Length: 381
Image 1 (cartoon, rainbow, N blue to C red):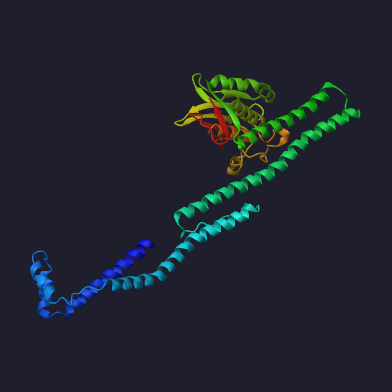
Image 2 (cartoon, rainbow, N blue to C red; image 1 turned 30 degrees about the vertical axis):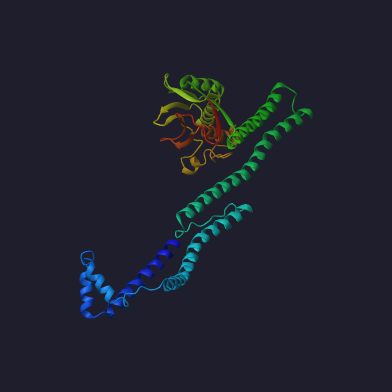
């Protein structure tokens, strides 16, 4: 605005001098005025004759005084002030209006209304549009976190209360002589306590990952031996359900990751696949090398999850269970797949799930080659 105002004053002064020059020429005899216009085409060549004319008609070409120039310049400045003020108000409104919307939305978020959003005005400057969009993304994440916190709190209480109530009821039954005091009854109570312990362990991993404190010890190891090890650990559950686990990983393939955490994720996927693969089913594990990283893939032919997009979009949510068969009666804590996603993100990767042609699910653990962690974890080489 300052540059525009200065340019306007200078243009006014230039117009004034042009007016004075035209006025002076109008006072000259017609012949002299015509001669001057002709001579001014080449002023250097005709300088002598021009000086004679200026000397002859000096009173006509007398320049205005400095005082007159200052007065005219001041008047021009005063005339421009209303336009500068009006333009400034318009510009300030363009800036203040989107900022006021963001402030109002921020006040709503501060009071706990995380659904508040700031409108993104097309007429606003690009920087303020980005401010509103980033604020809305932040509010959306806060809303999702708040919803997850409320849902998780209720779900955690329910998931812990169920096995705890069963264990306490069994123990009370033993004390009241309703159940015999024998090894089988104690084993039942121990199973319920182990269920609680698994829930607490999964919650601890999720809490550490969410706070960026999930410690990772990165190393390189043989992928096929690693998968064989996890299949061997799952062999009791595999044999109990009559499920075969097939390792398709090549002998020479190498993975760079935290072996313990990645093993925890793979075991959770194997456990999930075994639980819903059906008796006599097959679980296949493969490792595919991509341009930017590797994908550890677990496939099954179970009916635990429908082919609906909604099921797979919520596959890694805490305590989410498909209505068809993902119930706690199948033995899961409802946290295993959330732990898988948290471990993948701590490695700088992610986990995804999709339906297989002909039925079943395919879960991919995608890890980058660099092993770079996100804000979900810290790496130690």
